[in-house]
Image (tube, rainbow, N blue to C red; front, side, top):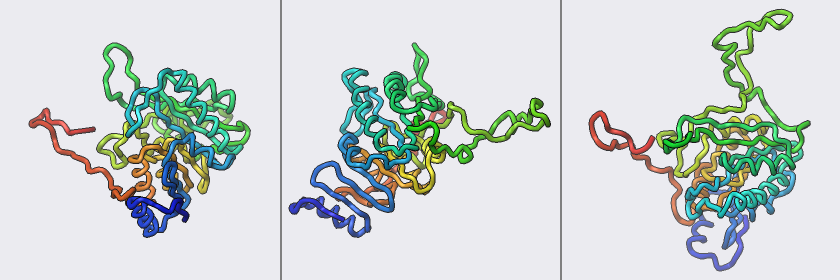
Length: 315
């Protein structure tokens, strides 16, 4: 455990004392980025363009990148808006190049983005990696129902590898029901000896998984939280126990939390203090940040209105 600077502010001194009490490792600077580490899991508080160069090249087995989408959402003190799609894509190219450098030769990269900006990333990445799948994450409904166009019900995901002849893919770990065999009980008569179709299969590239709702146990206060089921499928498929998983846009640190549950190591990077706190809490690295306790949100299930028309605050 190391500390930088002799004149640590009182709040920072209390934070150092807390880390000592919890027995976690902390590399603390008086300015960002800061790094917190415990039991094979690292949380970096800072800009990914500053943190990624500090990581060892060729050291990461799997990267899941879910950057701001350039659609105007507010993440803490940061507003997700660039002057143009071109400016946004140039920013993406910078962290994508760094991510590719961090991957092992048999590593995999999953990238999410908005439907309107994904073509820029797709064209850029296909010149640097092998794009094996273009996945559609389909969910039940959009927050605002469109009336004069077709509302968005999906988000795209690119699945890329450095070397298409050697990469991790544990298909047997993510099998789903094959309706042809499991429900319809059909027979494949094309075989020399007719046999029933398989009841399980590797998922296709359309994944129907619900978005995170307020009433779910995994819910955190974040405008674009991804479900644990999505990350579980990706991590099980493209990594093995003990592998290192990197998320350059930590958010609610779902990637790191799922990696921990599945016996992987993790690195999460996040620029906003509020979300860094969520990561430290979910990974059980700390109970407070800068003197403030890290506690789950208190949910309000009180009804609004009365009678049959009564509704809950949030779904």
